[in-house]
Amino acid sequence: MPSNTRVLVADDSSTMRKIIIRSLNAVGIADANITEAADGQEAIQLFEQTAFDLVLTDWNMPHRTGLEVIEAIRAKNSTVPIVMITTEAEKRRVLDAIRAGVSDYLIKPFEPENLREKLDKLCPA
Image 1 (cartoon, helix red, strand yellow):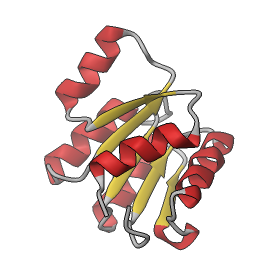
Image 2 (image 1 turned 90 degrees about the horizontal axis):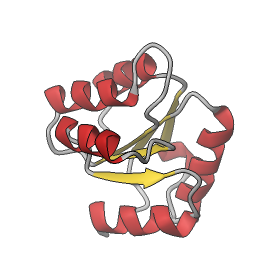
Image 3 (image 1 turned 45 degrees about the vertical axis):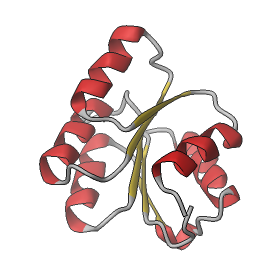
């Protein structure tokens, strides 16, 4: 994963954002290249203002869901990789996310190595 990869992390849990950011740091992405969004609406606004190479989003967030975030991003940019990081593991939910345009899916709780594997596949060096 290139160290200058610009990442948007959207999750309403500040603790979860910290865990994700620590995992991103472990794969070589500096804090300076990571932008946090505390809800879905903020994620959409940030995406519209900044060019990101990768988006990591939760499903259940206030103001806009992760599914709505994916749909808004896909309406603007069809190629940026998006990983849904969520507790929603039900098959129907996964299929909904795939239909919306998610690139990959990671179930919470996860190990940093699980995230690394997803990122290596989506954002090769």
